Amino acid sequence: MAVYKNYIGGNWVPSSGGVFSSINPSTEKAIGYFQKSAASDVSKAVDAAEDAQKKWSNIPAPRRGEILLSIAQLLRKEKERLARLETTEMGKVLTEARGDVQEAVDIAEYMAGEGRRLFGNTTPSELRNKFCMTVRMPVGVVGIITPWNFPIAIPAWKLMPALVCGNAVVWKPSSDTPLCAVELTKLIEKAGVPKGVVNLVTGPGDPAGTAIVRHKKMRGISFTGSRDTGLWITQNAGIKKVGLELGGKNGIIIMDDADIDLALDGVIWGAFGTTGQRCTAASRVIVHEKIKKKFENALVNRARKLRLGSGLDSKTDVGPLVNKAAVEKSQRYVEIGKKEGAKLLCGGEKHGTRGFFYKPTVFTEVSIDMRIAKEEIFGPVLSIISFRKLEEAVEYMNAVDYGLSSSIYTNNIKNAFQAIENIEAGITYVNASTIGAEVHLPFGGVKQTGNGTREAGITGIEEFSEIKAVYIDYSGKLQRAQIDIER
Image 1 (cartoon, rainbow, N blue to C red):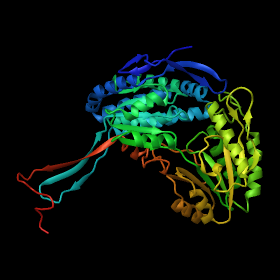
Image 2: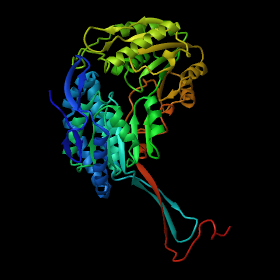
Image 3: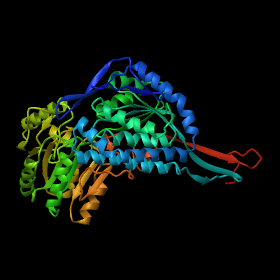
Image 4: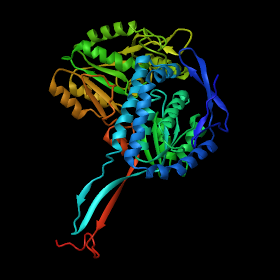
């Protein structure tokens, strides 16, 4: 098998910590060896980024945007190859993998346009003959730590705004998807990003991720992953600009006036798309009691017909979980749900003898105080909760620590707007599932989903830039704000 190297200072180099393998979750076979980076490798990457950052930030932002556009064009050209690679490395079905790469194309194109914007503000001064404005400045060297479930799209969500803002990057991808990271880095290199501006170090969270978070020269950290790791980062990063996106326990409300067939489509897609391995996945369905039985029967019938298998097979509906630990976690929560008194309607067990497959699982008679209704499982496990009034449904929706995505199915516009107003989440869909964010809108959540960061859209550049206030006094004399003003 091939041995892949780190990318530091524009060169592909070995680490000082040995290698590890990446596994195809459908076959449990290794697909390559990657560098198990040590803290010393991270330090070399940070030094390379520091050397490159000032030169990169001095390149006019429109030119930086042109390079991002070149990245988008290369991604579009390589879309099918990258999608097949992604399916092989992390398991999602090929149609979804194509969407993942397309999302990277979209964000690269969008952020390329920011090269001709990067807007600040102008505002009047309280003094005569004085001009006031704000401008955007790069943060400096930023550390990017990305997950495995969107191994092309999520890195692009972070890399593209970081680059267009004039930062240099040290990037550590998940150890479950290092090959996707290597291939994306090759395209970034081919597009003309100067040496040292993007540096790739592969390896486990400790020591590589720990070294990135704690490094004194690192000016910013952007992380997508678990809440517990996000909490550790806040406690260990020191005084840095930190952006966190930490997952969710997302719900879909289905009113008694909803289009049930449409809602079924949304629940199947939200709960079992990507095998439930999305931070926006729907793991709770909050259904009006009048239609609960009808909806429940139809959902179980649909769930049982979903075909499990390799994501490269066009007949497959649901691919594998990413690794053995994910299978064990899903099984552990199924047992918890049973002990708590929830009723298992289908699934609840591993599928097949090879690969990390788990059957789509549906529980009913779930109460909001059960662990399966409160804790993020990150697998194909869905809980059904019933309600009588919309106010009760919203209460159930909000009765979790997270607040990322939410949805309501209804044909009553009053219900829709009340849900939009009262649900505690960064995203609310009406008559659509909890997944499907578009790159020109802000993405992020409230409560323990994150720390206020919003990625993508116009707010995407805020994570990777600093605001500088500028005062230009052309009066030719000393003027003192708050003092030399006639009141």
